[in-house]
Image (cartoon, rainbow, N blue to C red):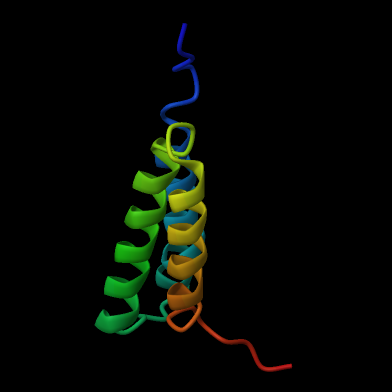
Length: 81
């Protein structure tokens, strides 16, 4: 018997990520560039799709997630410390 009770979790995580960034930035009046929005959307969608198949192909998903997160960090906003 295959469990499917958490198949919508990646979609919920993608929605939460969009609410935090760029949603919060947009609500404060700071508009991210189109390239940043495109990169965040592509990486977030890729990770969400990969997480839906993580039980059947765990190693390729791990590699894909690691690569997507490495690419995605270049498009996230940087804070001054």
